Image (cartoon, rainbow, N blue to C red):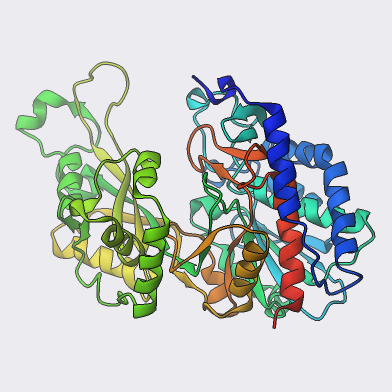
Length: 509
């Protein structure tokens, strides 16, 4: 059964949305106007322009920018620039990075404080055969949690980003001035590891504008299926790379594919690659074995362990296993210890292996070339600059110096202080709106927040937003638009959460 076949009670859905809207409606001490009147006016516009906002999202989904395939590079940047301009940003322009261009714009509201906004306008590749509907159609369907939209980018990240844009449109249409100034930076290479994004700060105007920001947020669907949200203090870094073994570079094995009967006489570059991969880890792939890999790994602090302990009690292990489709954690670790490992440990993961013939049936060849796609997650205080040479040195020391190591993208871990405004503002908004939330030391996934939290800016940064979605990087990616449960925000409430966040950032001490 596909999601589209799951029956949904529309009356229950609307009651749930109304309940959530009521929960999000306490009188608030806004920076301008009478507070509750401003908020009510903005909410009315968000409600009235809902159809236009969803149409805007569907149009965006229909224009995929896929950096890995070189698809719609300039078109995607131009579309992002148009979206920013229509939402009220001024001086919007494409900024060269040496790769896919970034998009920059400023919204000067004459406010005392400035908030940085990070968007990504690129998406992951797709295999349409794996999807219940065309991945760039933006199909509407009934999910068990309510009405939803399915498409690549629906939750990662066009859906929540479009909700943020809907909030900005509502400010303009209601005649209300934003309580903070905004600086937007949108990139088109996040899904290939942001190899050039840091170069955006070679532009003096971009650097000067972002230096005025009190912090940076990336809009996201922050609620799980239970409605709970996570306030994360950071994320792991990443190195994405390819390891390539070939008979030509090795000096052994064939220079081109040959008949497999000759394996008795000729070396195999693919087996050579497999042997090289085996040296990178121990414990069935669970522990990196690259020399010096743990040299700069910072142990968890007492506070981080405390946060994990609280989070372990608040989260359901059974639900986590069900969602992931797993029965056991690494080394059969208990729940809390598995979470500590998730947060604190670097990893070496094989994303994919490509060699020889992979079509229907057999084809008796001895391949001349093998390729492994890896991602290596980094924790504080590891850096790409330190780790990539260690990977190459390890392979050379193990007798695999002929294997090419081509880094396609990556960046350092990101960290934000628990007492920063951007973190405390998230907590305040979630608490005031009745959303259950928990603090978390760092995400196991990665985003290029290091360009904000590291040099040359050293700004607090993190993901924020209400709403629910799932399927990032996977088939049938979706975002919930109309919730049938009071615990989870729909699209309108997600847009209002950004309104509340901006007001909170304007007033928090």
